[in-house]
Image (cartoon, rainbow, N blue to C red; front, side):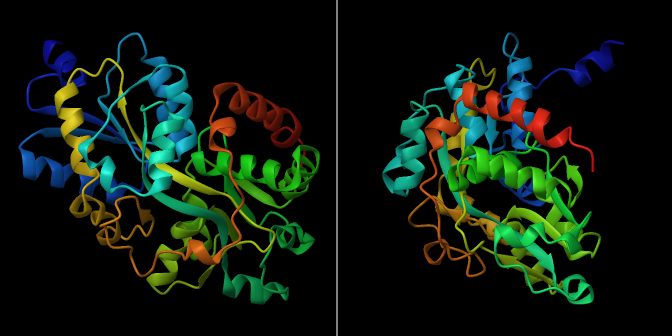
Length: 331
C-alpha cells in the first residue's frame, strides 16, 4: 500500500519536474526526454488537451501537483493566469522573443509566454472530396455543403483549445448571432466532436472523415508524409493561436520549472518541434522556422482578441451557450 501511494504521488524530490504538456505526444516526449538528458532533472510528463490541463489546474488549485504547463492554445493559459493558477515570471530569454509572444506575456500579467503560433483552418481528404463530386472546399461556408453530412470532424471546445479557438474565431469573424447560426448549420455535418483538437486531421488523412477542422499545421503533418490531405486557410479569414507556457502557482519544484521555462525558449529547444514533425512557427527570433510551416503572413488573419476571449467569464459564457444551442441540437 505504501509503495502504491508513493507511485501515485507527484514528484517532489530535488531533481524532479512534473510537466503538463498540451501538444502532440511526439513533441511532448522530445521536450521532456531532451531536457532530462541535458539537465539530469527527472521529468514526469502527462499529455492532455489545453482545456483538460486548465480544468486539472483548477481542480488541483488547493494542492498543486504540476510544476510547468507547456504548450496548448493560449486562451486557457490566459484563463488560468486570470484565476491566479499560474505564477509571474520573466525569463532572460524574453529579449529574443517575437512581439506576439511578449504580447501574450503582457496580457497574462507575466504569468504566461508565447512559445509558438499557428493558424486555424481545416484539412480535407482529396480522395473523399473527389468521390463526393463536390468542389474542393476553400472557405468556412463550403463546410456546410449537404454532401458533407456526417463527414466533418472537429473537437469539443470544452476539452480542446483548438475547438475553443474555432468558437471564438467564428464569433469574431461573423458576429455572435451569425457565428452561432454557422455553428448550428455545421453541426448537421459533424460526425463527432473529438476530445483532442488534432485528432480530426488524422481522421481526415486516413479517410475516416472528409474534413477535419484543426490548426493548419496539424493537417500539414499528414500532407508532408504523403497522405491525401490538403490544408486550407479559409477564404473569409481565420483566427490563430499563440501556444503558451506557464509555471503552476504553488509548484513543488519551482526552481526546476524556471530552468525548464528558460530552456524551452532557446532556439535549440524550439527546434525540437520540427524534428518531432510539428510545424508551428516558433517564438524565439533566432529559431529556424520549419520550411513546412504554414505561411501565416500570406493568410487573411483576423485581429484575434486574446484578452477578451482568454477571460474566464467569456469562455464560460460561450461554452455554456455552445453546449445549449449547438451540441444539444438533434442531428
